[in-house]
Length: 195
Image (tube, rainbow, N blue to C red; front, side, top):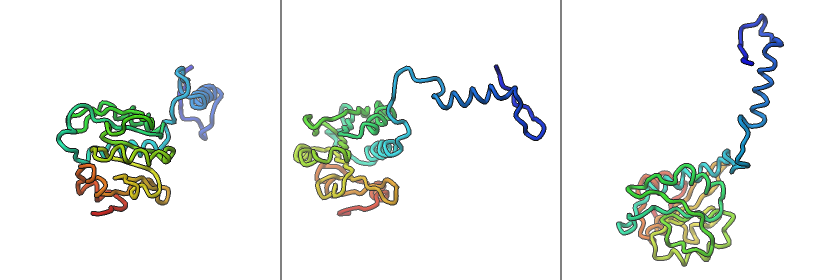
């Protein structure tokens, strides 16, 4: 039954509008159409949305050596399931330069050096010591979210400051992986080590 909202004296709700209001409330409380696919990842995980956006923009603001500018641009994710889903949903197939982005979920037994970008989330901090030697000598941008991430060898480390997600940057760690960090990325960082 269509609900027609018409001006009522004194903004009164009439019996004709109650079924329509009830229907609208029911749709919002159960999800507009119901989800036949089952539960999805948390689409409102703002931390995951922000991290995914940061990672995509880091990839655009870093310059890789010419030999790394062929094939797909691989972004590997260890942990961070919601953030992984955000990257896949929003950025898989987009381009960094002429390379199509390919998002991969990485386990601690895989070869990390195949990644242009490798993000190790805070729930996988225990494997970071294994990751560092494997990416040494490769042009892999290592991004972490842990206290002391830069000291361990990450080029970028997420930090939370007054409930806001920010990042620290180590230019020397990036340069150790033959990555060039431009002035734009440096200006956006909360802290820049070895500028």
